[in-house]
Image (cartoon, rainbow, N blue to C red; front, side, top):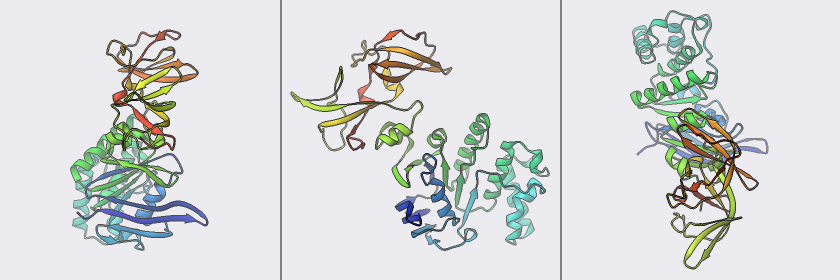
Length: 360
């Protein structure tokens, strides 16, 4: 199957400083790909290279089977939504939506039809004669999205489109973008630093760091089987708990040991057979169970330091030796700071990383 977007051996450098080097990635038709990573990781640079807004040093960009590496943005068959709304303040919503089509010389009946279809899709019908100053932030972003949709292209690029909105509006528009993708079936590439957006929107997520893709996989795979320590620590709130130790083989079993902790990890799904040596055990907050001893799980003793009620659940921070760890409990939590607890560890859902930081 032909890729909707294909990046081949892409390199982007400023002088001797390489922002992206030797990157290759194929994005399938109708796929929703999210580029996720911390500030400065190269995700917006990559998106701009696909859009034709960023000069590349080497490599190729293919869209819908066509090499567009040196094509102008307008000739690449893409629609782009920026972080800033970038609306024309003196134009009505209708004119903002139709401006690009009018410049392109499309017939008026075709322009009107596209504007009406897009307005209906984004619930903008009653706002078409208003100017941007008369709209809320969420409505302005809908118009910005609509301006890309009226082009009726196969590939849409989103560069942190929700970052200027408050939390409630972000949640609402996130759902609308998900519905939009399900309805249109276009290929969408979406840049964000918000992991909630990535996990809820994406078919696949590309986790980036220093211009390199650390892991490219589905949201469940990224969350439950992170490829390395960086991905494991970047995804999740609170972040995954890390416990440094060693893996040792003894009498037919494989054990992870750290301080007073010794756990049988023979059932762990090692990538290439059980190994020995320095390792890090990764446990997400929900991988702890307060009634672990009753369930036959290995346990560790600690003392509660902070309880953070979240409504439907709570995050409990506890001290284990000199280390602070977090666990997530559902419902109302009656624990108090200073209280002793003995949580169980759900090792079946744990992650193990070697001395090089890669998943074992």
